[in-house]
Length: 211
Image (cartoon, rainbow, N blue to C red; front, side, top):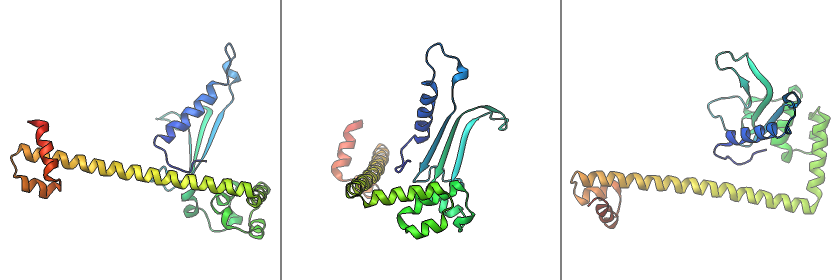
């Protein structure tokens, strides 16, 4: 389960899956003893925004002949939870087992026990709901869950702040590049200040970089 977006997350999933595959085999053992590795990743964000699907399944196939599978020993499932409600049908009873689980992940915190028992056909989902209720009633578990949620909120805030800072730094660097070009072209100081919104001191410091 991945809540926050991380750069290069697909590479990370592949790295861990490959490590699980290669560490199965002790020295001198036959390759035929290797067992398949299946990665299932539930993302609480959208990784592939250009596609409407919420469930992606990646394997090792030939580029020119997609029907030709090298091996089924490595499969990576990526499931984007935010897209699920938009794409799934409205009736829970018409959903398959995977869709029931996805609905549970997205809405368990909103539902009451009687609603859960009426709509979910999969007994394992009901069992998970009971476990969730038991955990929620435990004070220590509730406090830990609250601290976890606060930690995730702080993490999301820090990531957003870092992106914002990076954007602002990029804009500043871009303005400085424009100012240097204008200085090279002999533009008046007032004009450079007007169009770049840099201060006189900042422009004076830029002058020193190429004099």
